Each structure stands twice: as C-alpha cells, then as structure tokens.
Image 1: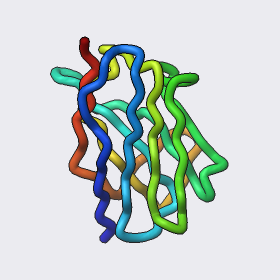
Image 2: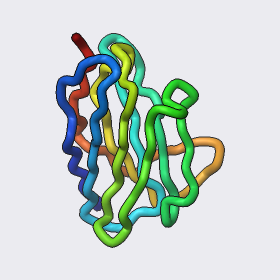
Image 3: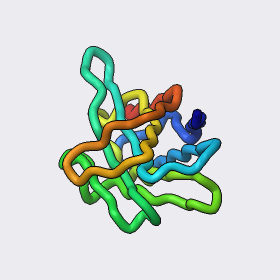
Image 4: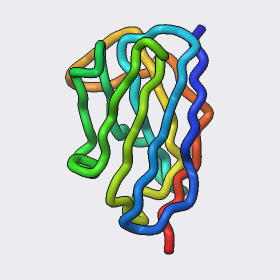
Length: 119
C-alpha cells in the first residue's frame, strides 16, 4: 500500500503561479495529477513515468503546466503557470505501478489539495 500526500494548493490571482508537491510512501512507476472542479467529473491533468523523461499533459494545460519528479524522494511536482479561473479545482495526486501511453489508471490516490484562481 502506497500513501500519497499533496501540498502546495491555495488561492492565486489569474496569471499567477503555484507549485504542487506530492510525496509517496513507496516507489511507483507512474505518478501524476488529476483535478475535479465543482459539478464536474475528475479529469486527467499530467503524468510522468519512470525517471520523469516520459510525460503526458491534458491539452488544456499544455504550455502552462510542467510535471517533474524526484525519484530519490518519491515525489512528483506540478508547476502551474499562467493560471486561469477555469483551473480552479481540487487537485489529486495519483500513482500507478504500470505505464500506458494511452491512459493513466492509478492504483493509488491522494486526498486532494484545493487550488482556487480568483481575483
């Protein structure tokens, strides 16, 4: 059983930046992020596999968000720049023992951290 703990959420103005962190209690192959806005389904945001050289992003965040990982610390990061009000959501860290280029199906989930983009 792997436990995931997120940190770094908060309130930021449109155009601002936030960095989310997620520390895992054990090693997994793929780590990433999903988000869920009020009244909407949870959606994929970004994932990094292996050393972090393999990455995938949702179209809505490409060019604005960057995912990275430090395997020595079992930690994944999400640098979010040029934030928009529509990025407001609870962001969930996720991890899997496997990798797929077509979909990310986590084995483990974090409890989530709130990100609010508002002036």
